[in-house]
Picture 1: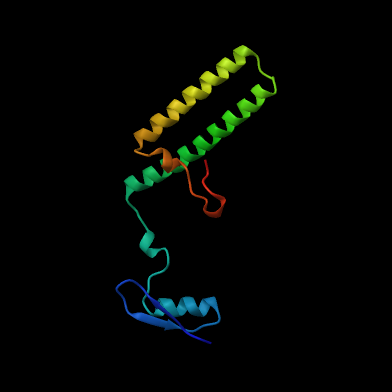
Picture 2: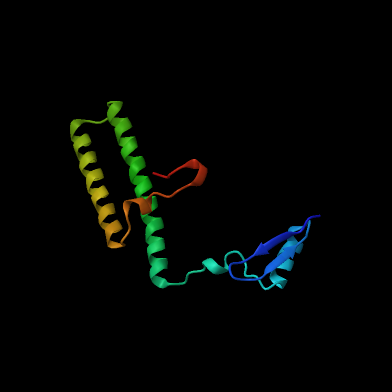
Amino acid sequence: MKGEIFKMSGETECAVQSAELGEFSQTMRAAGLPRAGARRLNIDPEQVKNGLAQLALTLVKLLHELMERQAIRRIDQGGLSEVEIDRLGTTLMKQGEQIDKLREAFGLSEDDLNLDLGPLGRLL
């Protein structure tokens, strides 16, 4: 089996030859290399708060978009009176304004609420 050579930025090279993932993992740890997620750990409280706000607002924004689409479907099907249409439109408009205020309060851009789902494309 051909060995693979790995090099962490600024560190020495390490050759690993293994047919099993467990052996590979043990060899990497024995070489003193950090685990995959070790470098990405960020325990800054401000970042955690913004990360949670981004996640929550993304979900709220997604639900808002779904509600708007459902409202349009109901309007197109003729299932709402003029008064209900006005009330629904006003409610969705105010809800959108509140989402924007919260987004700005946490310093998030509109693009921050649009997650990239890789091959599936953008969320919103």
